[in-house]
Length: 615
Image (cartoon, rainbow, N blue to C red; front, side):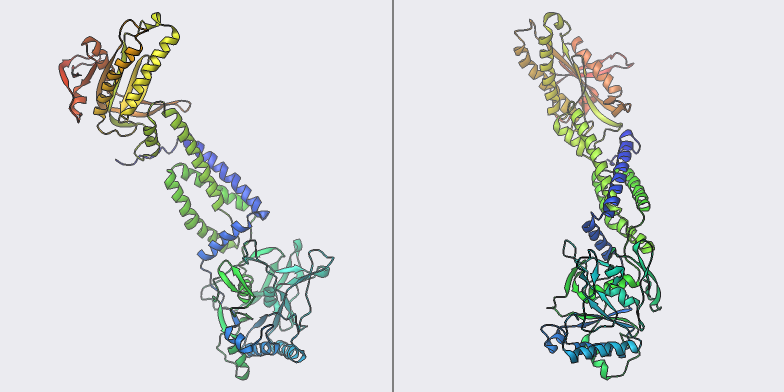
C-alpha cells in the first residue's frame, strides 16, 4: 500500500505555515537584535567555526612563518628571552632572502644587554635602510586614570614601527577575534601587530587618518583570495574600527609555509637566492617550540601565537573578516527562509521534517552563508530562524495530534489511537476501504422511559454502552456512532484489522454473552429480559473526515452501512440475535456455527441478500 500524503492545503496546513512563519520571523528579529548586542557570541563563534571548516580558504601564499622551533631553542639554551643577537641574525637573513616586510612576534620588553640590544637595533635599521621594514610587537598597557585607553611600553629597540598583540581568548578559552587598533592616549590609535605589518613601508608606518563614526583609514597591503593568483600584494585603502572582528582562520597549525629560524639566520653569510620561500613575502618571526607559553587554543586547534597573528594578517590582507550586514537585509533573508521553511515543514511528516532541518542547516545554510560571505564578507544567521520554524510547526502538529487523540479516544481503544497517530498507513483523509460493519440495537427499550426514572434509565444505557464499547475495542473496532440505543461499529478503518469479518463476529458473540450478565444485574429494575440484535455486513466504503473547517467528523459512507442497519432490523423478524450476510461469511477465516436463512428481501434494495444466523 502506497504511503498516503497529507493534504497540501487545509486549514491546519495554513495555520501551521502562518504560525511557523511568524515564529521564524519573530525569532529572526530576536536573533538579529541579540546578535547586535553580542548575546550569541559563543553560538555564532561555533557557527563561524563550522563555516571555516566547510569553506575552502586558500592560505595566502604571501605569508611565511619563520619559527624558532625546538631544535633552535635547545641550541640557544635560552630559558627566558630569545637572545637579541640571534634575532638580529634572523632579521638579516630574512632581509638578504628578499622579504617584503618582517614582523617580530617576540617579547622585547626586557633588554638583553647593551651589546645584544644594539645588534638588534642595527639589524632593524639596516633592514629599513634596505627597503625592508621591520615591525616589532608589544602588549598594550591600560593607561591609568584614562578608561579605555592604552599605551605602548618601552621596548629594547625604539624607533621602529610596532603593533600590539593583545588578542584575548573568549569565555571558552579560544582566540576567535581581533581588533585592528586600540584607542591610545590623546585619541591617537595604537595599531595591531598585523595592521602595522601591512601598513609599514621603508619610510615607516603609514598614518591612520580619522574617518567617520570613529573609524580610521590607512593605506595597507591588499591581496584578494584567488586560486593561483599571480598578483603580489599591493597598497590599497583600508577602513578599520576598534570593533572586534572574527579571525578568518585558514587551517590548523602549520597551514602557512613555516621555515626554521636557524635556516634563515644562516642565510646571513650566503648570497640572496632570487627564488626562495621568503622572496617578496610577508615574514612573521615567532616562537613555535612545544614548551613555549606563547601557544593558544583556536577554532582550528592549538597553535603558536605567531601562527594566530599570521591568520590575522591573512584576514586583513585579504579583507576577508566577517561582519554584520544591515539589520533590514538580514531580517529580510530570515523572513524568506522562515516562509519557505514553514511551508516545507507543514507538508512533511515529523521524521522527514527533522531530516530536512538537519540537511538544510549542515548542507545548505552553511554553503549559503559561505556564498553570502564570499560575495560581501558578512555573516547572516539563517539556521536559528529555520530551527524556530521547525519547532513551531511541529508544536502545532503535536497539538493537533493531541486534540485528535483526545477526541478519537472516545471511539476506539487507546491502542488503535496510537496506531492512528504513528502508523504511516493510517490516515483520516477520505479514502476507499474494505470494512466490516456491525450494527446493534437494544430491543424492548422503547417503553423503558415510562417504567424507569431518568437516572435509572441513564444508568442502564451507560452500562449497556460500556459493555458494547469494550467488546468492540477488544477486537480492534471503531465506534462510529451512537444512534439512540443503537451502535454502529466499523472494523478495518481507519487502521488495518486482520480478519476484520472475524473480529466483528467475535464482537457480536461477546455482546450476547455479556447481555446475560447485564440482565441479571437489571433484574431488580426490569420485569423482562432485554435482548440485542446484531447485523453484520462487509463491503467497500468511503471512510474519513467529513464536514467543514468549523466541525469535522470521522464517518463511514456507503451502501454496506445501510445494509448492516437493515440486516439488524431483520433479527427481530426472524427471531435471531446475530445475522451476517454472505459477503461477511465469505471473508471469515475461522469456523462458526451458522444457519442459512436463504435469500431474504432487504428494504431499499431491488435484490434479496443471502443471510446466515450465528447460533
